[in-house]
Amino acid sequence: MNKLSNVIGFTFKNKVKTKSFLITTLVLALLLTIGIHVPYFIDKFSGQESGPVSIGLVYSDYPELANSLEKHHGKLAVSGLKLTKYEQTDGQLAKDLESGKIAGYLQFVKANEESFPEVDYISKKDSIKGEVQTELQAALQSVKTEFITKGSLTDAQVAELNAPVAINVQKLSAQDGAEASKDDNDFSPVDFAVMYALIILLFMTIMMTGNMIAAEVTAEKSSRIMEILITSTSPLTQMFGKIIGMFLIGLLQIFIFVGVVVINLSLPYNQESLKGYSLDFSQMDPAVLILGLVYFILGYFLYATLFAAVGSLVSRTEELGQAVMPITMLSLAAFYIGSFSMSAPDSILMKVSNYVPFFSPITMIVRMGIGTPKSWEIIISIVVLLISIYVFGWLSAKIYRTGVLLYGKRPTFKELRKAMKAYKI
Image (cartoon, rainbow, N blue to C red; front, side):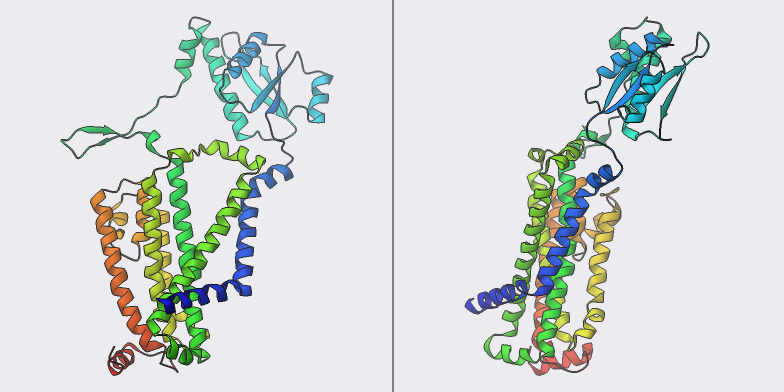
């Protein structure tokens, strides 16, 4: 145990001090910061200001419709629009439009006495912001309903008439054939965010730390340092020490990236943009986070043992990329299956992938975040993954013990088997 801790500490300290680790971490943290601030930069460079958008409202031709629009707009719970009334399209309106005091103005175009008039929006641009148009259309729909009914309906009846019809999705329960309702409110944006963050972090950890494990083993082997190391520490202790040490490095990077994200999102102008996503972390399902972390750890160790075994078979770093390609393709396949199946998390493909150890760490995280996996599916998936880690760990340990002593060209499976028998492994 003491030798294992020494290998872990040596691997961690040695890798943290390298320029490649520092530069990679710094570049990724910088990219995260830029990505979080992209919406803010777009608003700044497009000349858009924060706060409600001011729109002029000309009421000379239809004063009753202008008053009605102002009344219905005032009833909106959240408004990003401010209406400023003008009696007519005179010099003051043109002056305010030119100075930017208002983004544009609305006017009702006369039609026949019985028809609702057309509504024109005039601005210096040939487009209108999507949220402004949505808000105006909602208020104008209420105005049109009130105009057509000629006051025969109350405000409550007009509001009910304009309210969209909600469709509740129901799912047939497996117990006694009873119906259990599952409407759109059961979808948790927080669980989705946690799920998406976990699969991204797992994929990045596998790709980055896995390749670092294989590269370090190959570098030590090519420089003949391995011959010195195995005299003081067993190959198995070296392999698992490197795997655990690299895992700690991956956790350190994750903590740094999470800190960068939290710091940037805590800025006032970024907090405003988060309000529209309704992220309430008090509503997070603890099972999603706990089981997600379990799959995260198990998935890492499954791939890490394979990267270490493959790295021990390569004598030159130039051959490493080709050697680890099959493992890289497996991790990419798992990521793509999970990503492209988010619209159908309970599909046959996802259910089958739950029992494939190379895919289950990502696919099960997706199903727990936005799907409905049964308890027995989760248990069987974890058991299969644990058995696979044991089997591949045992096989990788044997390959590692043999591979670190084989130099020259990459051995074939037949040569590797003979070497394992010769070393009585």
